[in-house]
Length: 417
Ligand code: EPZ
Image 1 (cartoon, rainbow, N blue to C red):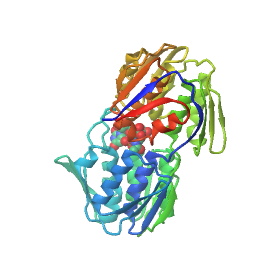
Image 2: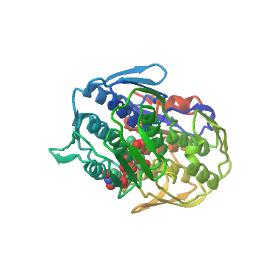
Image 3: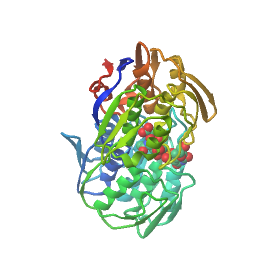
Image 4: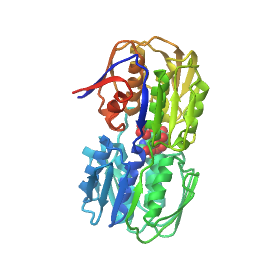
C-alpha cells in the first residue's frame, strides 16, 4: 500500500488548480443510466472513486470512455444488468446512486447494501422509503436491496433527515415517473444543484434545487447532454487550510468561492485573511491563529467533510476550540492519530475539545477515511521532522494527485510505493 512521506516546516507558496467535485461527478455518472443517448461530462476528477464508478457502469452495460483532460463520455444504450455487486459497493458506498436511475429507466434494481463505514452506520433507509413512496416494491435480503416498479408515480416525499445522496437518488428516480414529485427537507448542497442542472440539460423538469423543496415533473424520456462538473469545494477548503496552517500564501484557481462561505467566514474568525475572486481564492497565512468553535451542519452550514482538516488547524491555534460533529456519529478517528503527533484533544461524544497551540512532531500515522487522511497530511506539513501517512488509498479516493499539487507549492512530500 502506498504511503506519503512528509517533512514539515515549509511555508507553502504558489498556485493550485482545483479539480472537479468528486461528490458531484459520482451522481452525474450514475445519471447517464437514465438515457440511451451519449452524455459527456467534463471537469471530472480522476480519483479512485471515479474509476470504481466506471467499473460499475461498465458492469451494467454502459459504454464509458475516459477522455484526456478529465472528461467522461458515457452511453447507456442498453442496460445489460440491474445489479451493483457487493465487490464494487463494498469499496464505494456511493454505488447506491445506481438504484434510482436503474429503477427509473428499467423498473428494476438490485444493489448490494452498503454496510457501515469508519465514520458511521450510514443506513439508506430514507432512500428506500422514498422509492416505496414512488410505488416501487422494495425488499432487502441476502445483503442486497431489490427494488421493482414498472411505472413509478410522482409523490410527496418528506425526508426525516437531510440526506445528500438520498435527495440525488430520489431526484433521479422521479425524473421519469408519472406525475409530479415533491422532495421536502431536501439537501441543498451544490452537488445536488449540479445534478439537477445536468438532468435539466437531459430534458428533465426540476424546480427548487438548492432549496429544501424540490419539485420534479416526470417526463417520458431523457436525452443526451454535455455538462461541466462544479469545482470541488472540499478540496478547495483543504488547500485553504494548507495555506493557513503552514503560514504560507496560496492562490487557488478554477474554484467556486460561493460554495465555501461558511468555511471562509470561519477561517476569518480564526485570523486567516482570504481574498475572493470570481473563481479564485487567495489565502495568506502567517498571522497568529485564534481558536474558534465550530458545529458541522448541512449546507450552507460548515461541512462535516471539512471537520478533520479544521481540527488539524485548531492544533496550531491559540486557545480552546470545541468542534461539534453533528452529521456523523463516529467522525473523530483522526483525533487519536493527531494526538500521536503531539496534539492535545479530548473527545466527549460528538464533541472534540482541541487545546492549542502545540508543537507537533512527525510520526507514523494511519488514515482511517478520506477526510481523516487529509487532516494527517495537513498536520504533517507543520510537524517537526518526518511524518509517514499509511493507507492513503483513502486519500486517493477523493483527492487528485494531492502530493503533486502540494509539491508544486513547495511542500516536502512524496509518495512511497
Ligand atoms: C454525502 O454522503 C457525501 N458523499 C459525504 O461525503 C458527506 O459527508 C455527506 O453527504 C454529508 O455532507 C457523497 O456525496 C458521495 P447523507 P451521504 O445521506 O449522502 C443519515 C466525503 O468525504 N442518513 O447526507 O451518504 C446518515 O447516516 C463523503 O466525500 C440516514 O440515517 O450522507 C448521516 O448521519 C463522506 N438514513 C446523515 O443522515 C439515510 O437513508 C447525513 O447523511 C441516509 C442518511
